[in-house]
Image (tube, rainbow, N blue to C red; front, side, top):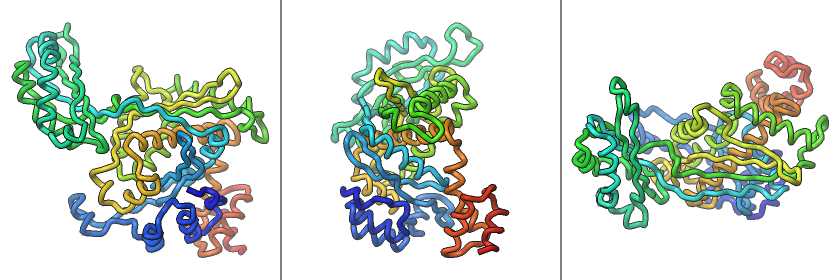
Length: 428
């Protein structure tokens, strides 16, 4: 990849952006044609076979964030998102973090979880021990239910048993939950796991004397945690009003607020997911599963808290970290049939599922840094509304070159709103 071809990318027009991606080696000539012909949408036949009562396609803008260095490798990051400032903020953060070495990631393992939840188990403690003793037999039966994933080196790898509810209070409901940890290889694995759970449920019922109530995967991907780290030299954080050390300390303090106040934590974490969801959507993955899993993880202590940590090291550098549970894949579902998803994976260099996890969590950390840095310095609205100016210009009736003219003048106006945009348009 020749990233020198992407210099001042945001200033290029639509056609020149696409040409620059070809010259940089990010996309192929065929992919250039797809973008130039606006062919990222599903065709009607494919859409009709994907969902019920299909009517048409609802599009999101598809763009790329730049400047990412992840584990020493340069990456161009595809994003599908309608919100202004997300791609710009992510690119800015990645450039600043890249000047200090970029992101490193840690993904110790990648397994998904399937659950069988049993009711009417008379002695749950005894049943738990019975299931543990039968672990090898249960894993074998699960792999027999889906032999293809086992032949590829994946399949059921471990087992856990949990007692749900109060054992000492018979007035409250209590259940027995059997977890299967499954290596789904490159797939997110919902169909694989659901098949396994339904396959072993009768045997689990026989072992426990209970009745299987639920047999399905869990989207809470605690066996598939990805962590991104970065170290940012404090002097690079300097702004007009604040020294680098002051910005560093304010970022740390703002994150401490999100660690103790759920009202702030929700907004703090939403900023993380702005970037994560945009890449998840672009790559054809299930952003609802990722959102649910991430917010559950933010609540794992019993209170909803910040997903990121920011601190300083002994050299005074700002040190950031983010861990997310990521139920994603690189094959199956929309990934293999949606033209936008196929292009996104190509832009990323056809990453493995583990590599995609590392990309997602790095983007989340970058997005959080950009948002919190803006909040504790000039405020969030300056950058956000600057990018919103073009939308206001269009809403005011600007056409063609007028859009950028109105947007540029709006940035200098005392108030950036629709009334101001209309007034500027009348004058020009």
